[in-house]
Image (cartoon, rainbow over all chains, first blue to last red; front, side, top):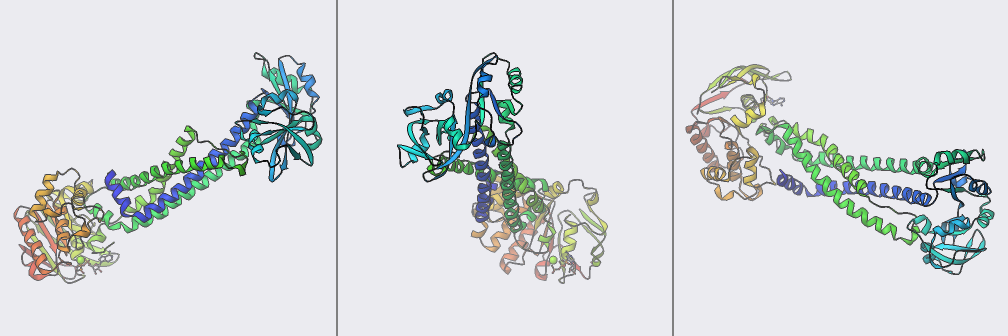
Length: 360
Length: 206
Ligand SMILES: Nc1ncnc2c1ncn2[C@@H]1O[C@H](COP(=O)(O)OP(=O)(O)OP(=O)(O)O)[C@@H](O)[C@H]1O
Ligand SMILES: [Mg+2]
């Protein structure tokens, strides 16, 4: 069965290649969009989770980017039972030299230690700490201009999180002046045995304008992530449909050209079921081959993306085993579903047309 | 034994066969002649299970076609087909083409069969690499793979020269002597004369 299927695929080399490519395009698209979107989500969530069990943002706003909370809350929070430490952060963005958008984090002093120094010192007044990815891109390695204000570069840090590695860190009071707010969010680090739920309740009672969530809960409910996930799923679905159409249309043409083959098989008493299976099997082989090729291509593309200075390390995707597995299953079902209609068409070939001398 | 009882066939409303009765015994070599459009192919299709008649019955060794549950298995075990065109699968060699009819057959059996048809040297060749006469003989070999009770051949020599055509009919004669029923539709009266029985179809009647 396998050898005949391969021979059949080889005999129709051009169409086989066309199906193969259309499958590869579709599977690579699914791979890239899924890997990149989950990469962005995991990057951002690992940044949020890196310190702090509770995140405090402005109440009833749809995105933390617009959040503004009073930084003085920190003093009250620190006095609560079970709080180890709290810090604040402003999330902003600014063009830097030729780069159109660079993340700018304004942080409280106690947060600076989260950034792993690889060169010189943490920033003081009028100074900025820059991520490794930005630093290598900078022409002027001594000072940096953020929203028209010049900062002396105090040092360089590195981070596995692309968003951080490509960012600039300054002190929160200076960021507050630039971005016109007190703090985007406050992160609370609790004692090991603290009751998080109770702590959240206590924090919320401090101010009616704030919302407090556990970090995990926050990540799960973050609107941006939902948007990214939904768009990624929609694009994957479209790619799936395109791949499916590719198989159905090209395979139908092939099947039409092979009608006499199916006619003679039917005359020889080969069951419709067997003909259907044989065609699905051919498609399945193509599905598997395309998956392997698409996997390698995607890994290569992700490598290029990761190392493209143009993208500042903000775009980063990783193909996990479970992602690869689920896309493998998707590819297989694409191949099988796509072959259903052509296979049934083939099986329905009427051998009577052979007796009429038609060279179908 | 094949028996046709009052077979009538209409395509839409056109009468192609009109009350045909016929009985063919084991090992009989039958040729069916008649003008183009007289109904030869229609009769062959009905006798070979490919087409259900509008009316009438076909009985095959006590089995009425209407009562057969698995027509595929029935066809595979009892019936062999040879058409005007060989319908060999071009991407498979001779051996694999034969195996389409029967996967389980051994290499030895294939070789014996090919020897009988004098084409043993073609076993690994592809259809595009052999002559028209040889292709038709491979098609005959394929029809014989399952040692069928009956072989149906519709214009099997339509694409062959007279020498190759004669070879095919001599082969049919040999097979019928060995007990296989052979039913051939042909335009060639000389070849038809080689059969045990000749039927002429005229305006849908025998
Ligand atoms: N599928 C079909 N649909 C409609 N009419 C058909 C069909 N097949 C055959 N016919 C008609 O039935 C009649 C008998 O056709 P058939 O093919 O049996 O003749 P034949 O004797 O085999 O002719 P030939 O010698 O040309 O092969 C013809 O009038 C033909 O036009
Ligand atoms: Mg005919």
